Image (cartoon, rainbow, N blue to C red):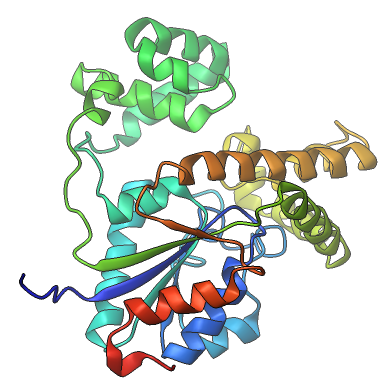
Length: 322
């Protein structure tokens, strides 16, 4: 059998609050690696405390990629992410270093590792038209329109998900074919790296829930609401009619904080809603991860030695530390 000469990468996957960031930092420092963030919230500038963005000291200690690459009012697609992340991996490997992919955004992982099905490019004019229609009729009405032309896609997209509704209608209007048709086509451009896929997830779901709650309370103490105040004061966001339709502001915690500062919910309800939304995010992440049949699962605390063994067996002999 021919040797596999592809460059290597390590993927630390898992639900939110499972310990991916800490382990990525530890391994990156030990292996002279660089971290590539696979997180759809960390791409936005200004989403720091509520997105658990690595602190300045961490960013200074280890090179990080795909953090703060967009303003919170700017679009950023999975295809754009995949192109940017792939370029980062190739640059890291060319320097003789190991890329460590760390995050929990399944669509970003899929786009980078497996490639995306061919899809019509975005059209700003059509997007603007759809957004104007939504402002007049509401996104539920546009979701109903989508159900007429693409019932398969509509069944998977919530009426409260304007970004995906807009994209599905955009693709149909551009191509005359439903987005489900394009999604069913074979993906292309798999990542030419040999990737060790490790899922970090506590076996006891109650442990993860407690970590989520404790981390959110720590975010509040660190000034999360003040951070959202600063976002709300940005002229670019004030100029947007419905900021809660933006992917950045729909991120868990941010949406609930925004609603609280709008006076729509009380403070106690804000905290409860944010923690519940984070738990629901973790549940969706775990559901997606169970479909990653080539990933190995570890409890980040109980299975630490097994994690180290998996890493050691994957690394070339000259990089093993014992």
